[in-house]
Image 1 (cartoon, rainbow, N blue to C red):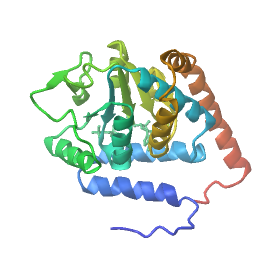
Image 2 (cartoon, rainbow, N blue to C red):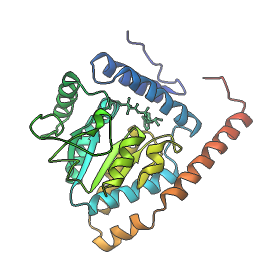
Image 3 (cartoon, rainbow, N blue to C red):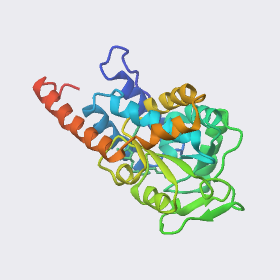
Image 4 (tube, helix red, strand yellow):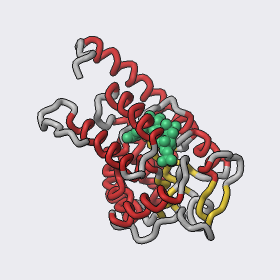
Length: 260
Ligand code: PTJ
């Protein structure tokens, strides 16, 4: 069932994004747990004001610099990411010479194919993570996420992992990879374990990351190294938690609780 979202609804954008996830659920791209994960993200986004903060901008710039200095960057795509930002994933892959790899927690052949089709319709030429012949296992992981492509994540030096569960981010870091997470929850294990965490909604992050890559493209390698080395992820996360506290205080002060 489709609902018509009034244009002047104060949270129209958020509701449209929610509909996108629901549609993708009906197409077999998003799993039931993905709906729950999206709701959790919505709650954080609501408190954070549903806009990109200066902290997220700084993390995105550092992530762009890290991407541009990578020898083999890979964008890991799960159901929710495909549902929300397939076109931006392809744009980022083209602009940053990165591979796209499907990596699923709830892995089925049907979902792999549905997500591959979606990414190809969005313009992707090559989608890794779907061929049995090239599949490898990463150590220390029990979940289906351990299955990776031997041409992709296995060899990658930088991996973008949007909307992840904590185990894999930790395993990838242990393997010596630099991990860029996108997660609205600054307290999640993924956020805490990643090298750079962008605490923002993926629907805003990816277009901004593409812009940032374009802006930094002509910088010298030393300058790019400095940009991401100067970024302090723990400090940035601490400040994100503080902005959640401030967001809650603001919402209470404005007495907007329960209005939408
Ligand atoms: O497609 P699959 O099979 O790989 O499964 C994907 C899900 C999302 C079900 C799986 O990775 C999972 O269970 O993830 P978690 O552990 O719920 O973590 C998802 C994180 O993403 C949570 O911390 C959410 O707050 C956050 N999140 C949800 N939606 C967004 C988001 N962060 C940024 N932008 C969003 N739109």
